[in-house]
Length: 61
Image (cartoon, rainbow, N blue to C red; front, side):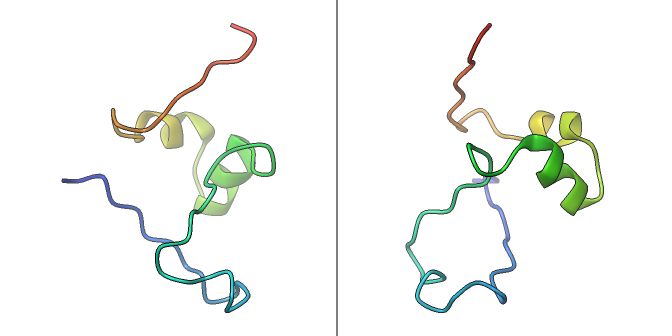
């Protein structure tokens, strides 16, 4: 499968950065604009690169 994501967790607390732990990529604490800025791109590019198996929930649509 090509649904892989690589995350740099070198600055995360050791107890939080364990194999098998869940990671929130986008959500209440991380908006698409912030994630895109950290990746050096725009929100649209982030959203269009998410695979079909990514769970989506549309609010206020």
